[in-house]
Image (cartoon, rainbow over all chains, first blue to last red; front, side, top):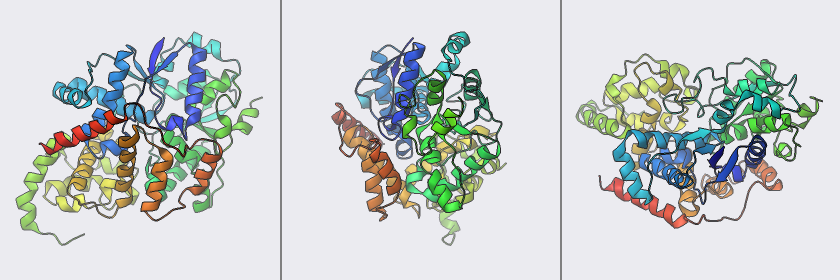
Length: 286
Length: 190
């Protein structure tokens, strides 16, 4: 199984462990990742809030590059995934837009390849093949699966899980022996990029998410988006300072927990580079 | 909120709706004010206009109030509204179009910090082909006169080698700059 790999900007900086753990887990599962040569930023929220055409064009250059690799695109980060899958859909439904964008980027793009989120790809793997990889089941670990917004919404764009009560990550965690908790904030927004530009709003949203996960009895949160992870983990200290709370909930990428279940070392998965140290929770697994 | 000028509202309102519908591809008059968007909006607590009020004000011609609202910048494009709208209006897309229009017309209200962040972010992408997190954060801090915002986080990221101080352009950086120019040219030519 070969994919054109789109890692994205943050996976080479503040979310380095997402890239590290994605590569480690995929290599173990026989998923071949071929990095898109000279990929560019997907444009993120800044682009679509500024110019619709720009947001499609920036994503389209990556789609065009991946097309020369003749493989579907695989994207671990939910935010990048959302931009790429949106651009692909809009161009496939609107030939005029595609022509316009092709002219702007100066590259050929025929729309022949798909865009897949890593979670979606893992969900479609043969369960027996997945089960064979689990050497250290996450038995007894109570996880709050946090999907955020961009993985599942709007369903007309992403369309691989229920937008109100998604299950992909819960299923995966169960296969790994963990116990996903029932909670109501799976798809609540964390405030995304406003962590930088308007932090008070983000701290309120993050506080509510952490409090709900905590009340549901979660030992940790699992997520699939670099913005969610950084708001929930790095800003957890700010939440505690502003609200006088004492949250210490580790927030890991799903790839990190999968790696733990495969018997990989904390360092291989970047578990040592998060803000709230998840290692005590992992060690308690025995 | 500024005093309402009903003459202006009637005269220019219909024209604004037509332009917004073209930009967003959404039909504003489809909204029947059921309020589901507002009920589900996670940012509603901080907004000055609720999402359903945005739709209503646009419809009755009070678009200037909408363009200058905090709401259009606080919207995080989470798309709960889009997902739940029984009339299938992509309200998140309408919010995008409102931000685009507000910027184009120089009508950004009090939420300058968010609009500025977008500008700085895109400037980094245009220059290097990728988002340079350290540079974006630092520049935003300096321009909003809060030089030490998130410096506690920055120190940890730096210590762990996660933030790169230096910048590196992708090979196709000139191509990215050209994409920005072409988009601007295409949009100006409309």
